[in-house]
Length: 186
Image (tube, rainbow, N blue to C red; front, side, top):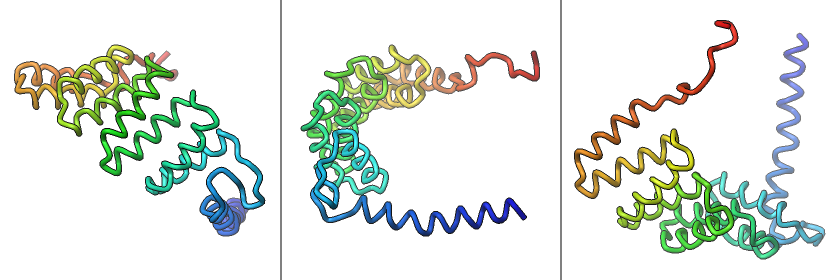
């Protein structure tokens, strides 16, 4: 019975709080202020942009990320998130510019290098995409998504034997490969 009450409380809390949160995040106030005109911090704006991005509101998220970046231009994740939104809207050149800014701040980010590879691939710039995927793999050797992108580039470039070897290496990757034995086997 206690579990049921806890579940009922959770449902009631969600039904009350979610509309409040949703309304607060979608209020008509400018992206840089709250409803009572209190300026938001760069982090609060970034969080709002992430919320909009998660809701697939890419067009609305972009100016919020821009507001955040106006307050903190060194937020590499905001640059990358803005780039993701632009990518999802098919604005690949702008996406590439934003991801490049993220890489200026954090040049060894495997995620940003991978995202750059995706954007270059969408622009049919396969040689450049391949280099970006390889750079991501150099940072994080078992990065399956970057390895997959590399394989796709090799196929597009007509480098069939390399693409086959890449696909085999991808198949051989296991996300559990480097883990120690489970505790129950020790």
